[in-house]
Image 1 (tube, one colour):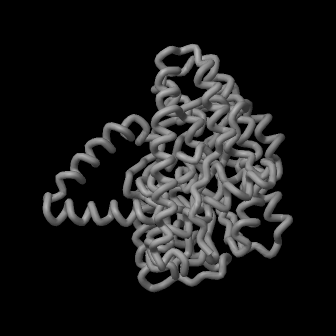
Image 2 (cartoon, helix red, strand yellow; image 1 turned 90 degrees about the horizontal axis):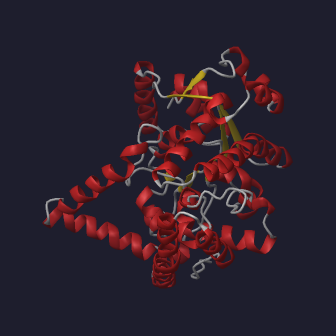
Length: 393
């Protein structure tokens, strides 16, 4: 049965308020306090009302979340590529588009889609053009690192933003270690179950919108710290874990966060502290999902090598489907064939970051992730500890 109450993490909200009040940069302090004291309460209250009104839709009460697929891996490891390729199997999968993450209720989603139809029919797409212009301004500075669009599938974690439970808040408040949105499996049981139960209700609403017979498709690097909770909340879940050389993923993630924090003019000291903690968290992201899956042999799973995914996406996706107990339709087969043709013509990007830039050591990575280095033969193509590494795709 669907639940209609909106979840809000008051304890984390109060903690963020204290951190914002203590911020030394006056400009950042004012912006954060304005967001937390004005924007968040207003928007969250509006979401709560809409969430409650969702009970007016009979389709919501009839919708069940069955056999969802979760793509969980370190950021920059191919999670986005996998997610967008699999989301093109539109007959099977439902996924959150980026803009839908900020409107979690079914009522809101239906009203926005109705407004878009009105804009196309009576306004000639004038509103859409303005939104696209805003999108270019907003996402332009980081598009070369992580391409984004309001109408592309994106990370589910964003649906928790105005519940003050999303990892996206770390972009606004680089207080790694003081705020925890990652180690959810270590949270108190009651808090963990409430948050993940609410997340499930958001997924239910997305399915009620896109088609209750579909499977939800999720992509979230931050979910690596909550795999046990995911399996507790969705006992019939399927898990896909992509792996890529950490020499490439870790500095790429740190660069993305560094660029985002510098745009907001955070202090170098605070950024350095948080980047160090984030780098340490990366080891858990690589190891913890496999530890949990080892405890749950009944869970269908697929392990993906990023290098193989980039070179042979059709072969890899077809193998993932087989291991998850799913079949590839003729229509989706054509989609994969087209992706394979594009992969054969693609070139690696030229954006390169070094391990030394962030104080990382290749020998330490090899030692701490020895089993994974051996499993995926990363040593055979790995750069030296101080060499540049490519961002890839």
